[in-house]
Figure 1 (spheres, one colour):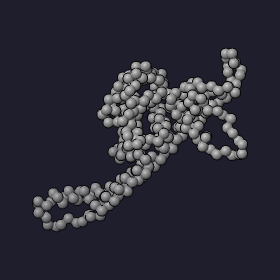
Figure 2 (cartoon, one colour; figure 1 turned 90 degrees about the vertical axis):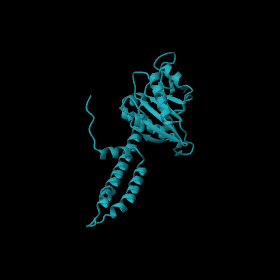
Figure 3 (tube, helix red, strand yellow; figure 1 turned 180 degrees about the vertical axis):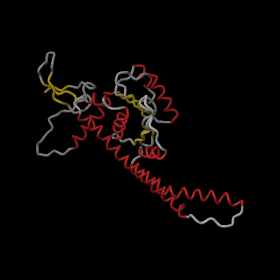
Figure 4 (cartoon, one colour; figure 1 turned 45 degrees about the vertical axis):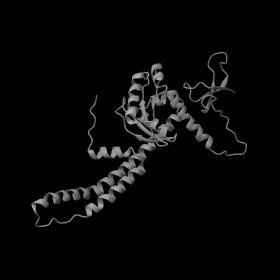
Length: 283
């Protein structure tokens, strides 16, 4: 395993800020300037004659003013860099969703993502459902709380498991339930690109934990694409969409041809979320 690249405290500060919305970064920078600038502007010459009892207080004040002098420029500068990083990160998340939506096989497109990209994809899926998102970064590709959601003044936790071959077991759900109790969350989501074991599903039942497997995640993304298509205005009078919606999940359908069975060679409408959803409409 390669060593983790060392970063400075300044870089870590920018990384943490960049997880916030860009406008929050700018507000923090403005507040820092408004607080530190008056302190830095109060720099005065140290009196020539001071008593020993006043010396320590004068030195502490001088140190604070010196730190404020540098901080009034450094912190806003860091906040501007973080805001740029936040905007760039949002752009990458939108592109991830667009790439998965455009893929002929969304499941394989999701499996091909890195664990970090998978977390970003999941975060964008929740953001489009009206949640505000805080990315915590988790503890790497295999553990930790990855996202904190807020909606209607309630807090929800999300753990992402980019497991393509293994099913997520009950031990993971138990640990997540403990984290929910510690954080005082109203509920939580465990999202995987694969599946969950029956034991995991049984444990989550009745505990306000929603298990989101790969099929459900693909439907979320497909439903958003369908909503965008439906929002587009009709360009010509009488023009209609010839692509029906899936009767099971309401995702858009694509025309396919049966390759085997009694209907081999016949065309039909199949759900774009296949194999997660097997909805079919006859032509």
